[in-house]
Length: 306
Image 1 (tube, one colour):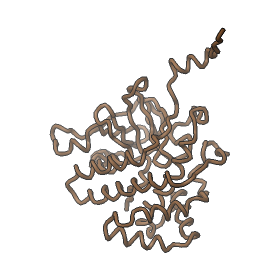
Image 2: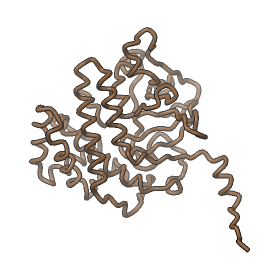
Image 3: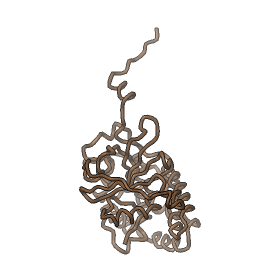
Image 4: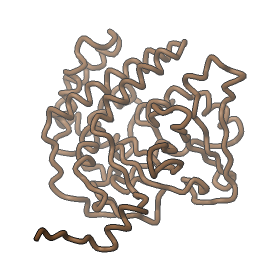
């Protein structure tokens, strides 16, 4: 007689009613982001589309390089985060090789201006490149780092994302503090409201470094946790139809308690929205919310502000 193992009640309940706290990134996250950057560049009629196009090339290089390297996660984080905390400033041993490989991968695929910067970065010694990476991780970059920063960011994203892809949901336990990424401690760049299966309507914050997503109640401010002073702002697509391809589904969640805002993307309105790419294409929304007296919370690794 064939016997059947009966799962414990806890496992059955998890399968039927479980709302995951943490979601791993898609395996082709950088390829998908590259496609979105290309779409947004095509929709943008200003010179900003040149930068969006450059970032599409960077993302394609990231996916290629991530597949090429064995970025094994040897141990879990020893602090409050599952992975090594970004702000600790410990540069991964694989950084210099990944950094150089990304620079090689974009050869012949970028503008002459970008190629000049890339050639300078190729000349950096390992010590110089790792010092740059340390400043990026600890958020202590200097003015002279501006044009180099996106390339260091790209390499760091590859490493932390590759590490994250080796985790399971059991590794990432729910945390009380949901204002930072439970995997690497980075502030979210924004959030998405999902549309798939049992997760329909749930909000997940998105990490710009390791590309993890974690659940936060929609009624609460993702920065201070207040639930009574939130409001949603967006750019009216009907009055500005030319902006619809970019701003469709993009909202700003502003909080009167902490006077901050973060962007939220409704995937039922724009299913291909990516919090990193769409953030850079919807800077007009930042202007509108900023003029209303709210400060941006969280950063985008590719948004280099003066």
